[in-house]
Image (tube, rainbow, N blue to C red):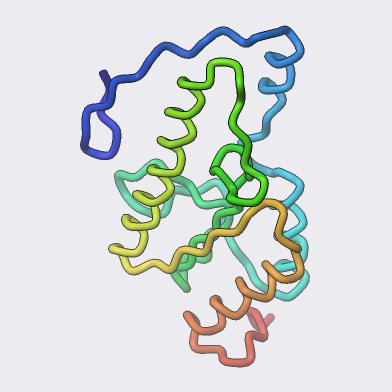
Length: 159
């Protein structure tokens, strides 16, 4: 039993991978610096917005947004379709189905808990799916950043 979100949750041991190929594929999964994150970061940096990465902005909460705009108190997450159950592209593995269902459900529950924690602390949370167009995501992030910073034209930081 482990404590998850203030509630004790029974966790089954992680099942063994169904094949060496599956094990190799999952071992290559990136935690950060994924292609969608890098594309978004390049676009925002090119627009003059400066952000932090790999930082946990809330004391006592180990969750790390993909992009953090500390002054604007804006947290941006790029969620993977598989890991966060995208309604368009999310899939459920057939092998070890019960374990995966519980694992992915916990991921989604943790996402909602993270959103609540950040919002309660006065942050705005933006979540996007990995398949969304980087230009459109960058537009939305820049608009939210401008509103939070009181820069209605969203010019980015002045040099």
